[in-house]
Image (tube, rainbow, N blue to C red):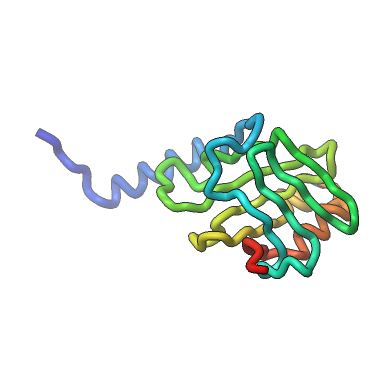
Length: 150
């Protein structure tokens, strides 16, 4: 027989769990196998005549920014960024480490919208962190992105 705790106790317990385990865990992936639903070319508002662009393929991410190409084959997948019980379609990645320019956070299927990619500075300005690199700033400013329609 299961005895359910009152709603207020369950909510309080949830807040304790979130407070104690509230940090998201990220794991490095060697490629994007298993993320085929995200594959494609993304551009600002889905317009491939605009820059920057991001190509998502099995090998990883390819960032095309101001005439330069940056390839990332081992991004960090923020598997628990949405919380322990998250059931939506948004998937989060951090492609760059601090040594490669202050990190950015990529949200695929942003706000539960298929084909939408949002890029934002991750922890920009927190803990005295440096400002975004020119490449990462351009990526943030181009957001939101969508899968190319042309």
